[in-house]
Length: 294
Image 1 (cartoon, rainbow, N blue to C red):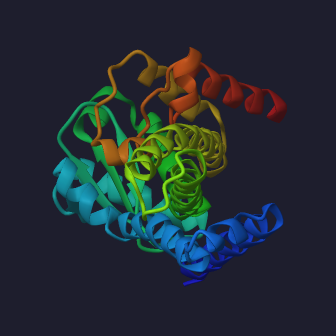
Image 2 (spheres, rainbow, N blue to C red):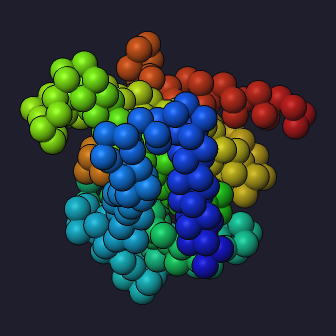
């Protein structure tokens, strides 16, 4: 409930910020003069911006199971499944969160955690991960995913996505009104200039918004790696797991879940849009952590 309340408070804060900025810049008066309901535009932007992100969060577990074919296990299926469930139970207890659902799915090496609530999340691993990594390395990956849940990364990423969505929707429509009414001198309602400008503006602003969301996602990967190190008592297992992953072809996840996996991020300009940092950077951060502990 605290995280839902945080989502609502953030939504209200964004509305207030947009209102203040628009008033200071005179945007509200300009839009009102053009017959546009400024308050309705802000509420519409926030509703669409946060609504879509919030709905995606609420159905994230269901979507994850459907899209990957993951099957929830309870440990009675076999020795490997028992070890998985027992390890997640032990790590989640150390992290101070409720026991997540544990799922297994067929595929190349990967794992993910998702869910709207901290105490009822889902942690899933692929059969490829279990086959290609040692148990210590798999445990480190599980610690990483438990770290995401304990840090509230799913909710926080939803908040970030909702904020940038709201700004993109609001600003694209303001730009559309300015182009249509001021530049093109259209005074007969919303013309083609408005709709074209809104579409172009949403694409351009959306690119910058995706860079912001990707940057935050990369930071949470470092935090989840650190959480794994804390839960296992050493950064080395997670560093070894990442090194192993660097020599494998990570399993592809559905587009909506890519930020939840453990796949490696690219270098260069592509890193600006990547949800994961390059594996070399993550290993270096863990090695530096290990050196400080010596």
